[in-house]
Image (tube, rainbow, N blue to C red):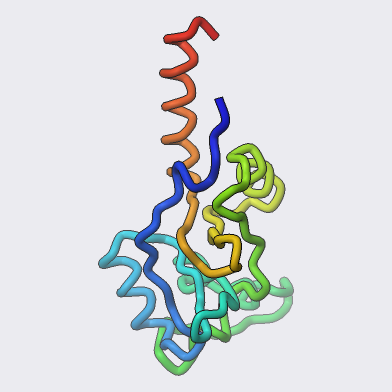
Amino acid sequence: MSMRVSDFMVRKVLTAAPGDGVRETFFRMREARVRHLPVLDGAQLVGMISDRDLRRPDWVDEAPDLSHDYQLDDNLSVGDLMSKNPIVVHTYDELARACALINAHGFGALPVLDKGNHLVGILSKADLVRAFEQFLATGHEHGV
């Protein structure tokens, strides 16, 4: 049974722009109950931001002897905190590839691009659990 990214990705994707304020973005994400947002500059995917990035960016804890103040306010933008050059999967990729990338990098979600490299979805760990559930149900029916 071939399982592709396109079979399990979420197509309705909430996105952010690099200039969006971090506080406003955090509350948009909370309201929509999503934890990861692809960041688009026009139609171009330029980054990913997670609720964890917004709550406590990596640079706050960059060294044990340094202390940085961090407030969740709109003085900082999504572009300041996002992960740049995100690793992506494509609609036609096997689900196993997405699993390998998520396991190797510890991501919670991957942006999904089509053949023309346009953002068309997002694939999260929750989507992979759904795929696994379907795989197990189908496998048991066929005695796998």
